[in-house]
Picture 1 (cartoon, one colour):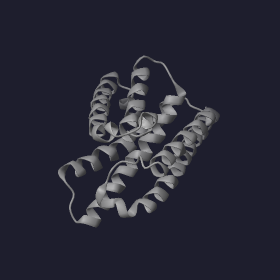
Picture 2 (cartoon, one colour; picture 1 turned 45 degrees about the vertical axis):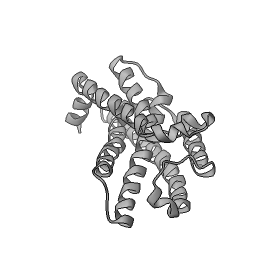
Picture 3 (cartoon, one colour; picture 1 turned 90 degrees about the vertical axis):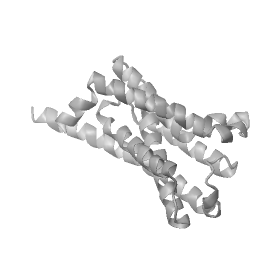
Picture 4 (cartoon, rainbow, N blue to C red; picture 1 turned 180 degrees about the vertical axis):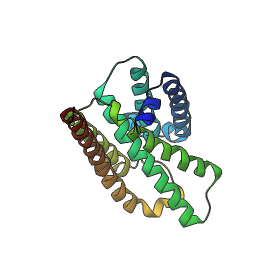
Length: 200
């Protein structure tokens, strides 16, 4: 793992990852374009879930390159990357199971969103957020779920419309699991650091 973390903080690697996430963020907002055109202005911030998650991570990478930290953005990045990364993978697999077909774009979304979920967790050793930041992120994610499934602002998967109540239930629990997983891993990281200090 030491070699992996050494790679993750290499400047060239960070720049490449920054470019990939920046371009992915732009593509994500373009993908949401038709839905955003029909979205009331008060909901615009909460509709493009995945590109906003990758935007948070892009900001984190820029700050990391500058040796700066913004704890709230770090917490938003890791939780939303994992949540919406997993969510998109599950939705596309569900489409494949229910329709028997998935477009090349669907397979691309499975790969790219799976990578989103993983990359956020890989940078756990570099985050500086605290529990208070995770509480704010929990409120953010549950508020986002409320807007999506109470006001009908969720991403459009027409072939899955009959499953909307089950998807809403799954999404709510995924929000809680995502925040708890990050909290657990951060506590584990602190415990491991203390053990290293004690051992000298």
